[in-house]
Length: 311
Image (tube, rainbow, N blue to C red; front, side, top):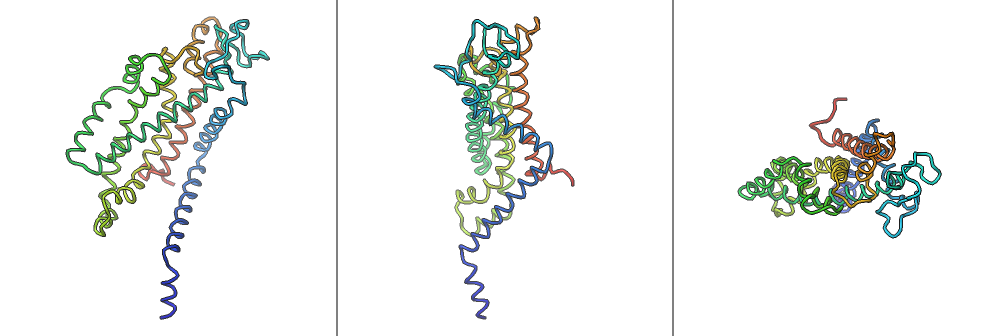
């Protein structure tokens, strides 16, 4: 009897909490190992880390342009210089813009774009989708009809129309993409919340007297957020691709150190053999989108049981 009481005393709240924390850490490590065991995902992760390092170390890799580092420096004495020049490693554009500077600082511009847009869209989408899925009824009906209106317009066309109305500025591209991309997160989150709240552990939490807010925060949200995380990872690449498209057609400030702007500057020289001004920034857009899509794909295979590959 004494030993039973002693064992019960040992299983106090701190011990249980410690055990739960260890379980979470162990599961996180197992997920990380599963993700990293995929060679394709590892390749994407290495690519993403290299691009992020370039963005964060941009002031060290190449000296910032003064007074505005976001603007490409111009060397009017070096027009359309090919790659390999000591002063212009990747050459220059037809207007003397340094391609290497645009590639390096364009990574920082792309990082800023993707982080801002993903942060805004995930926040809005998760809130709207959670409210619609958890409350249901008329609230769900109204919110989903609004989402349907947004989804009925192709993303690129919708973003193009918004950015064109607001005028050529990088901040307007951010706003346009945020307006367009939030709806997919709302739709994903609503479906997940509806599925999760039907589980027995949610009913059990309701029976023991947990409030609706506590049930949502403790039982529903953690088990519904996984597909949103996967989609956000993939959109880190997709948003840069769409943003570069908008910049390419003139919806960003002229001379901005951004890959789409640089491709637009270099397109006039392609026919005369000056390929470098468009090729290098275009390659960076491709690598950025490829890296995040590979990582997102690997995360989806591990985190979503519906797409888990047979082993």
